[in-house]
Each structure stands twice: as structure tokens, then as C-alpha cells.
Length: 245
Picture (cartoon, one colour):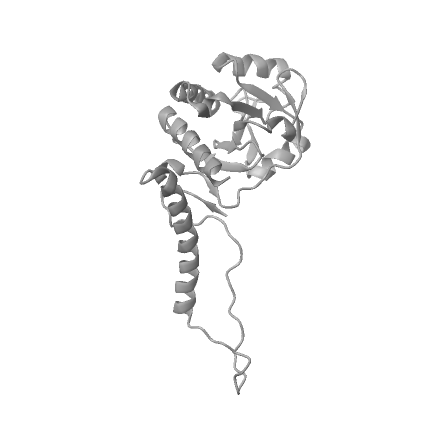
């Protein structure tokens, strides 16, 4: 799988490198097939570049030269969310099934976060405004997932996210249940002690994940971002994915 970035040659993940077969069956003498290291390197890079080129060609068919709008997209094999169970801001269970049928921007954080979390939620709110009446905004949901279940009870979460936008949802869960979701996305978080005894905070992922209606995680939008850029990427990635069928 490739994460499409501003640098189209950058490979962030993938399967094992291809292997070369043995000598032809009609060879009179059986010798191991030795390929120069330089040749193997060229072949490997060629395979990777071909995959990226295929993505660029497919994207160009939809957007022409503006493929940078797809930065952060996971393609061609985006992972699909499996089962998890959280508790939302109204005290109800929230599962993977509740995300079906709509596009979702998912962000991890906690309500006591001093900077990244409120800044990101405000950014998403402005991106909503930038999308306006665009079709990409009509079924776009925002889910803020707190990593601090002890302090972020449902009523706390409700007040917090609705301060930014009444349409935003929030949820959390005890650590073990929360890990069923965070591990799927590679969204690490660590509890850290505060400067005053008894206080604590979290270091956590600042990425915004874009989830398709069929639960495929099709994008990871990483800071720094501006509202217009976020809106453009959500719109562009969505149109590209929908064009693939």
C-alpha cells in the first residue's frame, strides 16, 4: 500500500520484494541465477515507480495536474476498519457500523489538550465552511475520539465538541476497548505526567483520518494544514475514490 504524498516517489509501506526464479527448465547445466545488486535495485525501484505512476495516471484522469490535492491518500489498498466499540457524547454505544454510509473525519485527542486538539477542531470547522454547499460536505461527519476516558465523560465530550460545531460527534472508551480502534490506524498515544503532582496529559497523533462509507480508511491528513487545503483534500480524495468504483 502506498500513502500518496507530495513526493510521489516516497514509499511508506509495502509487501516483500519480488524474488527471481531458477534457471530455465531446458538449461543443460543447473546454476543459481545471480543478478547483480545494481540490477535488482533498478528492478525494485522500477516496480515501486510503476505503482506510483499508476496512481498518478488514475488521479490525473480525474484532476489533471492537481494531483497534489491527493496528498495523504492511502491507495490502492486502503485498510478497512474492523469491529470496535466506543461510548458517544450521548452515552450510547458507537461501533464501526455507525460510520457506514457516510464519509467521516476522525481525530484523536482529549478535552484537556492545551493546543493541538482545539486548534484541529477549529480547523475542521473552518474546512466545513470552506466546503459550503459542496456535495462533499452533505454526508461528511466529524468524530472526535478522546484517549482520556477517565476525565472525558459523555457530558464533558458533548459540551466540548458542540462548542466548535453542533454537528460534531465525540466518543471514548476504556483503554483496552480504545486500542481496538487506535491500533488499526497506527494512532499512538502516551500518558505523560504534568508539572504539578496528580496532573497528566497525553502525547497523541495529530493526524486527521478520512474514512469512506464502506469503512475503508482512505486518507491520513497530517499537519500543518489550512482550512482551504483540508477542504480541498477531502473533496479531491473523495472524488478520486468514488471514480474508482
